[in-house]
Length: 112
Length: 112
DNA sequence: GCTTCTAGATGACTCATGCATATAGATGCT
DNA sequence: AGCATCTATATGCATGAGTCATCTAGAAGC
Image (cartoon, rainbow over all chains, first blue to last red; front, side):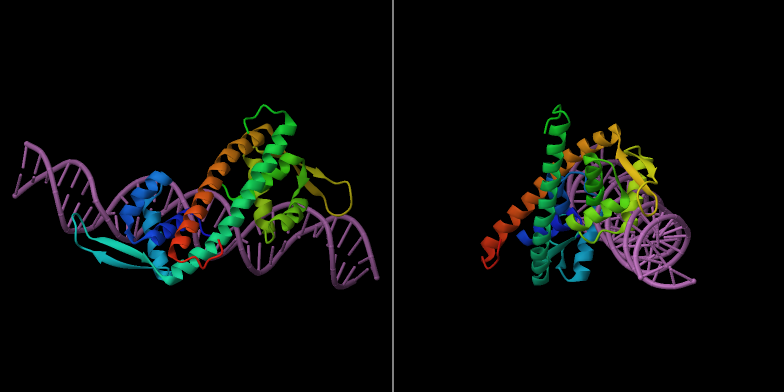
């Protein structure tokens, strides 16, 4: 499966078109410490795979912005991801349960 | 963060000592398709970092087995992982919630 | 002797991620 | 005009997880 950044970005674009810098700032709130280079590369990668389409927005202030919009193929991809993500979440839950059970048995001095 | 294999392996060793091949078989049930090379390398990596200790078990049938046991440092690591994993799980839940909300709004022909 | 099973390991590759840095338009300051 | 700063996109290079193929070698069965 692709990393968290991939999922997050495509999901954001599913909510509506946006340009990279905007997504970068949004991400700074949700998951701080995201690398701009990785973000822009991921977006271009999406376009290469046909999951999004981009166009230049020269209106507004500042440099031109490359605005990305999700495609039907992008929606399909997002859908298959959601299945995978649910599975991953379940695995993590199992990990947490197992860990909690172990630490309880071992002593109980842990804040689980 | 380290990948799922890392977490899973160290958690298994937290339940008790085991050798690589045994873990490989256990993993085939929980998360099929795991690569032996990756597994063995990960275990050696753990040992380099002091998270586990290994010793040869020449008893029993078949070739000698390298048996791994978790160290105190390994327990510490596992503990810090559990915090991170909980955070990741919460992110995945947020993703799934957002996706569900989006697809409901868009039409509702999806089995969420 | 031969194959098969058990067990551990390496080499080479792809891809996600991180860190530094480059480029360039727009804006504000002096 | 000159200069710094903000906005915006992008590349270069390194690390490290994960994958695929392959190797070594003891033990067991036939």
